[in-house]
Length: 98
Image 1 (spheres, rainbow, N blue to C red):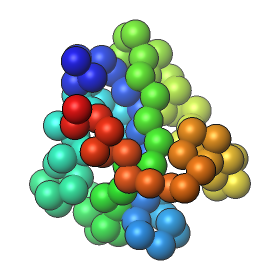
Image 2 (image 1 turned 45 degrees about the vertical axis):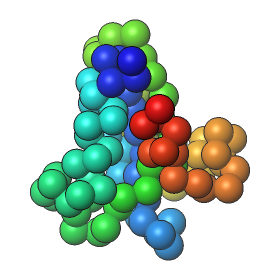
Image 3 (image 1 turned 180 degrees about the vertical axis):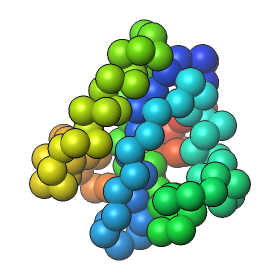
């Protein structure tokens, strides 16, 4: 059921050196695309395959607004947000696969 709701997510690489913040209406499918390098662009270029943060939203407009806000955040704010939900920086993809 997770794939039917808009979501904002943050990906990183194994070094936690680069972040990508995105929005989607199908989180499971979108993260799979990132992991299989099917999504061209920034995430593919920097090898961002680890889902370290996500939040679900009721509607796409709210998700898009949240994504825009998070993209403007400083790096240390994003780290605090991630560590509040995911203190060990585990890849959350297995959790959403059900």
